[in-house]
Length: 335
Image (cartoon, rainbow, N blue to C red):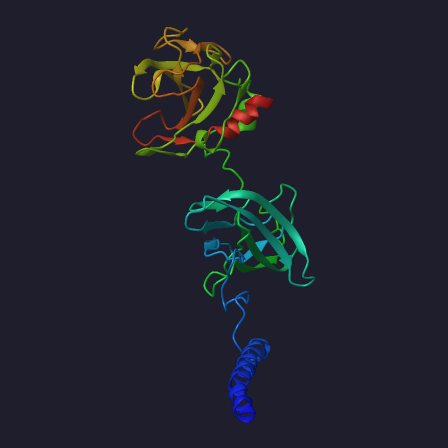
């Protein structure tokens, strides 16, 4: 009877031990390497439970165009044009450097600050920047408001090479060809001065520029005289003694003008006189220095001046031709 009871007690004890063993095994498995992953472990490749990872910028500034010469003359940096683009970005911070390839140091820096994208920009070099002969590299750098820097691609690296050359040696001055001062049978400028010739404008004046010279191109013809720029109303004088051949008016050209004939083979024409200013008439004899009219801007003139012509063989006559009056004017001016 006692033996039967003893055998009846063992199964429950074994069951309890089995349960305890199972629990211990489960705890051991949970803590052993390679076991069940704890809930607090981070999942691979992402973030969990409010842990934020930094996301790299998805766009960068791109240099769409960079125009720079391959060579230049020593002195101020050459003109450089560029364009930056970035989708959805209006401005980027821009800086351009010129780096010496000999020293690898920056020699010129243009900090252009926040510059607009999607437009062509000219690099604003410092006003006092100078480049000596040598080899250089032009480098563009930029970043946007998120810190994304210039994306350098094979076809758009943001760099260009520049060779700076010494300026060419100055060429020897060319002596101007001597001016023809006179023609056979016509007095020289010096001779006319000796004979008492007068300058034809009695007031402050100048000879203007190349467009005012004898032979300058005009629409459909060439300039046949020399302009003497002066103030409106300045007296116009006869350079030498002679006879007034005509006084007339040409609205689309000379305006009010007078023509004088001399006995030494020269005829003079005075154009753009002020209206109602003639002091002489056709057929009248005049002396050197006598007033003929006043300087104006009648006809096609755009400013007050005397258009002065000198002719050999008769003004507008068959066989006559104009000559350059400037050598005579300069002689009379200082005579």
